[in-house]
Length: 73
Image 1 (cartoon, one colour):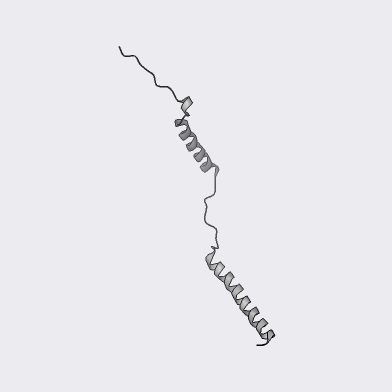
Image 2 (cartoon, one colour):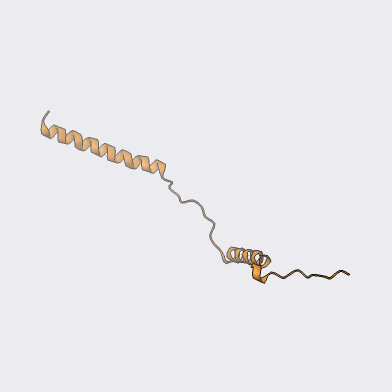
């Protein structure tokens, strides 16, 4: 085969392969990003309040109240 014909054939094949790659990527990648609910101050305050209440119940060991010992006679 002539060198010019090989160059034309290789250029056409590389163009077809290049375009097929982008067509496949268009089907694989999503067009719309996933829906994430917007962060509002209300939701952030609820989350902080919940964490604060949970941490209030769990005191560190050195701050936990000591049990009262009663003397039985």
